[in-house]
Length: 369
Image (cartoon, rainbow, N blue to C red; front, side, top):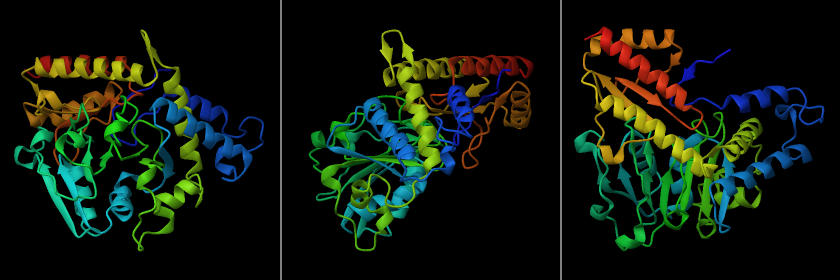
């Protein structure tokens, strides 16, 4: 039986092989007599799951030895508070505004910092371009610079991470990479901390990934809850409080699935990047060649993960969505704040799914023009 193609922005599609393995192990994980959801997080069974997941992720993302990998809770939204609680010293921080998620970040940071300085913003053009890093107005003495490197709602993505050192800034770069983590390599030489909810490319909702450089640990504000203090979490191998064990397990299976992927001479993350580029090119090329559909994002910063698009006649939106659902193309409605449509084409979305969407869009256009 063929499953529908799920274009949800998150929680999003999980590779079928991962779901099948989890189903097979639901009642009895590796002869332990327990399902993963029933295990003690301090028992040897779950510790082995955790250690394998951490090791696989470090290998996949080529995380350097001087970075710690933390599995936390609260999602990317909570990290907008947890980051300043750990890194701001209650002083000045810089934020780059590129869409809805970076707007949320700077608003939350204002609760914990003496000043949140907006170093750059694309709000004037409706979040359809990216501010050129060379033109960012960075603060002297800022504790960190934060950016959302892929905006899920507006569909803009940094295809290259900014190099703050080249801009004369020694502060660490903090990135929210929730919606494109594991879709491409990360240049860790340019990053001090990266965080992201798992529910787009890594597994189910419930676990939040934080990758933080070791020299940034140990600076939490006195008001920071112990469970959110990066140093404490790192020292306790993410076991200070009960972690989201099931979500970590599924994420670990997803890491193994990514490691098995190949594309020509590439494997793992490199293979995923090639596939994601091909999927995005297929969809964008069709939209650009159509007078019936439009994407408003500048071509040099279009997201490979989240593709918003609009019908020329928006009175046909409901008909489009109904027809898509009938064809097994699910969750294509755009975010309520921007309207239109949105196709999220994360790692688990095969090229065949994008081709099926393009075929339907072509058919719908012919029927309605």
